[in-house]
Length: 194
Image 1 (cartoon, rainbow, N blue to C red):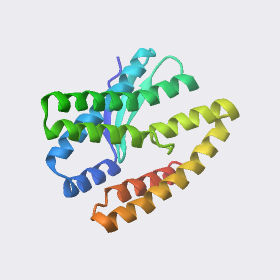
Image 2: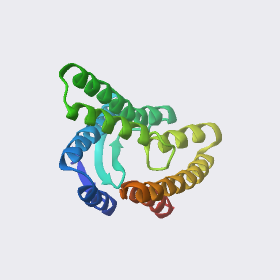
Image 3: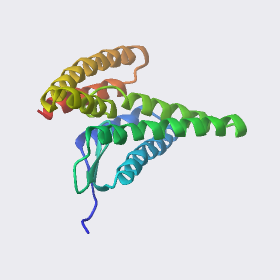
Image 4: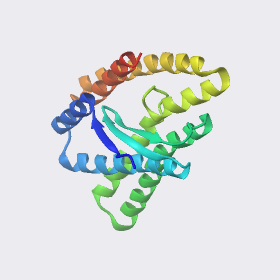
């Protein structure tokens, strides 16, 4: 039986440090809960499709799970695994909203917002995000792997640049630099992966 390994990237530590400077510990706690549930959604999908988690890497915009399986995932299975994380995030947001509605409490609504934001952000069709994985799988299925990589690469550059511009605007309006930092990581990650 092979050991599961957990790795972290410099981007993970950079974003974590930025969040520690820009956010409260309460927000970070609920963000960690939302991220854990999101990743458990991916793990559940990998397991349901007969795979196992081989390694887990913490990155600047989330985690990357490297599954082990006797055969590679089909394009459709890759889409299911990618969608499982955002689906888990939406289910958590619904549950947290119900918790807040019935029992009250700011923490429930904070978890609702963080989880929903995490799920929606991950659906952006940007390379390392879940939406990028779905885009690459669909484009590869229709036009071949090379075309899938080209389409995903181009859209990643355009959307990550748009996020960077939005991050500059948010920085100017609120002083919060986390979106700009995230966009920079996405742009760098895409260039560094070529």
